[in-house]
Image (cartoon, rainbow, N blue to C red; front, side, top):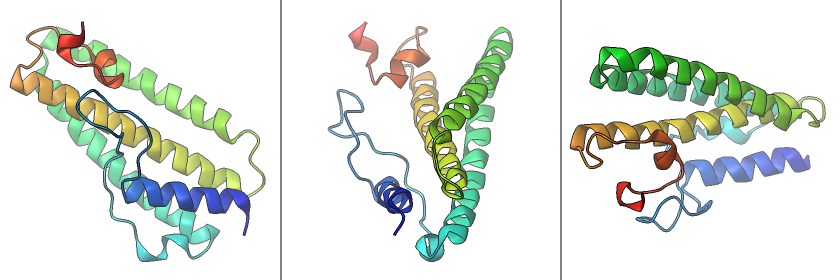
Length: 159
């Protein structure tokens, strides 16, 4: 089996079945990507893997869009444009980072590697923005919620 394909299968399994990938924050012992339903045919061949990644990407993009809408609703009018600018910049960064990540990928594996990268980065953004929205709604950080601190896994009290 192609080593990249094997690696993608292992990482997909970890992504969807909650493998530990590092320290998330001071309240958890592992960083878990959001759970997504892994389709049975996801590992049959490279074509089906690409199809599976495309379907999962659609679902995570829809989840991110819904989350962004919820955050925009909570923001004051003056904060919405900077938030939209942040999203546009994040999206460009995600694309550039994933293009860089696949620059050395061989042949057809580049497509799957790019799709997996975009999916993973989107999942990580959903996790950070979900925590941000939760902090907004619960008031746990007062009026001083900092997205970069949430992305780094820091608590409000860590300042």
